[in-house]
Length: 177
Image (cartoon, rainbow, N blue to C red):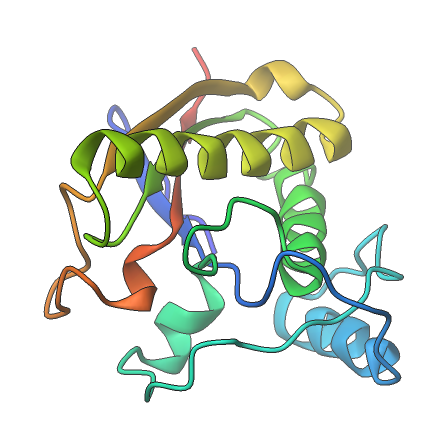
């Protein structure tokens, strides 16, 4: 989930799927079990409700990319239930002895729908939402060093600027000084 490449930031990109508000799903235990199976950790906040993707377009991303990205709904900056669980897993991984010295840079992105200034502001709100969730869970919240926005300026390779997969927060990790 994390690649650390000194001295620059290693890329750790997360994607959140789902609507801004959700209700508790009956298969929440299955989602928690999947987090344990895929990542080998039990998230502290596994009681978060599960959501479902709202975009019905086919997903061009590989399974590996999907599990290492956090995407947002159009115009949304709230974390879905799936995202909350995924971030809880990330917190657990970041608090392991191997990654306790990792500092984070969060970069918000948007699709190209709407104006440039609005997209940059929305992407920043997304990065701030991820930062808040990570700060709540990390033993040392000061490890989040940068929270910024690139708006629509850097879509994922091979995707149209309007693709739902461009609504994301990218998390980069490097060893803290």
